[in-house]
Figure 1 (cartoon, rainbow, N blue to C red):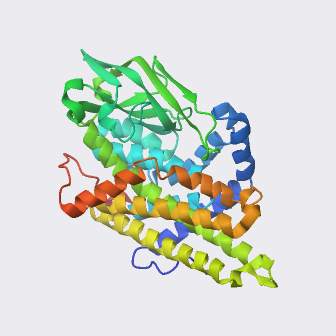
Figure 2 (figure 1 turned 90 degrees about the horizontal axis):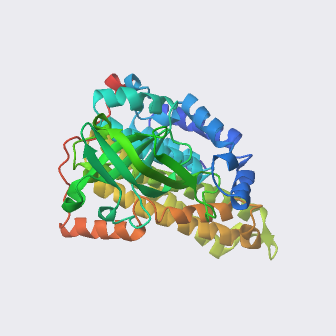
Figure 3 (figure 1 turned 45 degrees about the horizontal axis):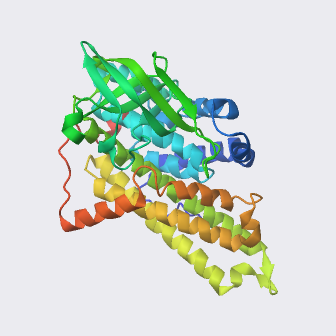
Length: 415
């Protein structure tokens, strides 16, 4: 069964060709090595020295146009739409979540924020090389004492003449040890709460910027996660993204894009878990017949298929709205909540279908389960998504007014 068929109302032949390209890359250049990379992450920890595969992979993804897939060609991108971004995330996470995380952070959270909020000079200096993949970007919002409660951040940026002095620490930063540039959020006026937060583009090479890896992760072991520290970093005013005090709105707008990529990736993980379960259930026999013929196994398989379709439809609806330039915070939040919960449940059932073998990394389902757990936390916890949906239903949450919206897709202008 082709689990990506029957979406003609959303996808074009161009999307199908893109899916084939990404799948071939992931299956030929990542899949044969992923178990070894995952094991290495458990044994020797994190950091670029323990991840020699990452830089070549980033370069290859840049060459394929994946790092700027949904950005206009004039800014170094591939000129495709936001649905293409979902297709890329699906296919990458179908092999391993760490690949999709790269797209989520580099493209979804950071490059699209530059595209939405940056001035032309910032786009030429930072967005073009990021879209081309010659420079890698990271997103620095979470801190040791503030995650969902972003207003509690302690990082500060104090203006002194034509620059800001940046001080603070960010944690759980994907690509922390590999990114060339960081989108950093800091308080420029601590007395104003969320209205006192601003955003800055910070280069790794500047004095006072350092990073170190996080060791002992449950999942995402093939990727890089760490902390980034800023000590009296001099940031030019020209590197402030948006106006002073717009940082919180900017961060939330970026999370609309990041959550969209997470939801799309979770859909790919659901498909991977279903495919693995079908193969095993048809090959494994108990009580004289394949376990695929046992009713309770069939029940799990049918629920996997239901969750795959509902997740993909929610993601594609959000992508369709993005293409039209419509606000999609509610729809993206719902897609992220549903797809990430579904991916964890499906991965858990996939392990159950595999029985004792599922508990071993001889089969990929135990890795799927470990990776799926993280998505219920990052870029907005499961509980936050539930509260947001309730607030939208009650009418107590409205879309904040933004000075700049994410541009609608324009094929003629972007191609």
